[in-house]
Image (cartoon, rainbow, N blue to C red; front, top):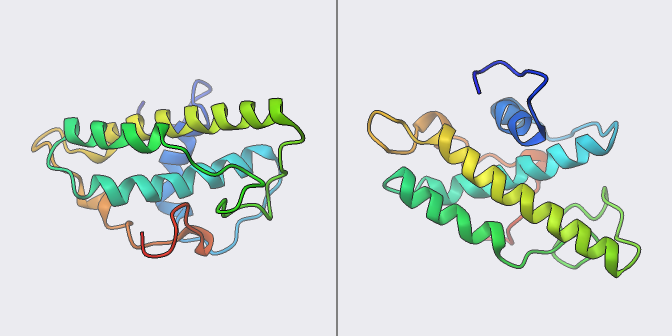
Length: 148
């Protein structure tokens, strides 16, 4: 993908593309479900960058992105999910499974695509233009617990 969003762009591409601008927002107006998804992915990108800044190569980064993509993580309605105020809790077990599968797919895709952007093809190291955002907190929220 070039730096231009096209009709083939999906929500993951959009979140990565706008991350550097969005990460400075303390508030974000939610107009639709896509905004909720964008918020979640933006927070997840922040978590990924914390891990990627410590990687010595793109292949190591891809391995690091595999684990958080599949690890058990809280979903809306569960303790530890930081966005319970803006997400509806799944109504039943089936919705719970669909939500978990969707968020897992988002996490896996985001991690892999982020590696494509973060690692400099010249030296195979994380770009400072990405890692400089590690300490920023979008909406004063984090997907990881305090101190992580």
